[in-house]
Image (tube, rainbow, N blue to C red):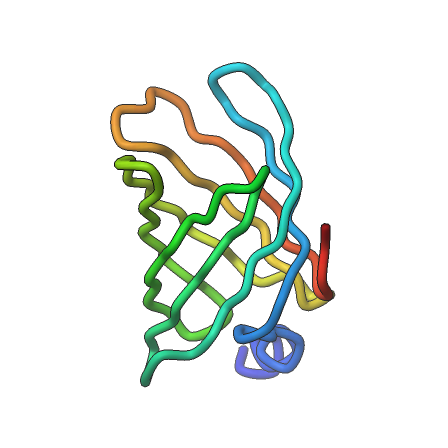
Length: 113
């Protein structure tokens, strides 16, 4: 069983800059931007997204393979979970406080827009 887990661990990046593509659940609109992840401590991370000229500052816990993030921007709060893919990117799900549906997001390694 440990052999199955090790390849995923080897590919997960954690800290770095990623291009972001997402879809808002409430209107199905899409967005693109960048996210920078820096390790803040043992199992803690700072996450900063820049989308359409707005910055979303976040704080996360996780091992780099899974990140659970809270964001704040313009008086709103968000919660998200990201799971590492084999290619070094992440698949994520997020919601703004009060949302009735979950939105989706992907991070690809390397700097985006």
